[in-house]
Length: 199
Image (cartoon, rainbow, N blue to C red; front, side, top):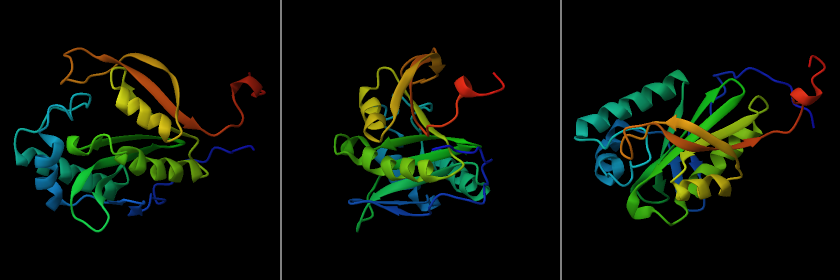
């Protein structure tokens, strides 16, 4: 099947809300600051392989959420919070960022919910939505080479490891120097440079 490259139209936004077997995935609110701060944003273990340091006070989390709300409104990126269906407990966040014909994803889960398959359950429908869009050809993510749990999540949602990006990400909670990352992606098959008549 051939695909024709179509520029991303930022009027075509991902779903506002997504429901899975156990989860409700919804836009963030400023009122989510307390549960995010106390649930995982200040946790050094949760943030070990993230690009930001643990939040030192609630104001940091409030500022972060204000940025999330603004980003959704402007169509720059689309973060959601993850809660259990039928309850109010916030267990993490997931996000997609769309750049023309490709999109990258990321997630964070509170430590008390590690090992329950929640990251996979939350990420799978978002990757599925992106791959179903006619103008998105590549959905990708990176994770620290030491972060085996995240590597497994990305594989479970249908991504394949493409290789190692050397000195690719600064994870300040793990090292003061940039660290290597695994690059994972799900892609649509079609024309490549090998059969491009201009080659």
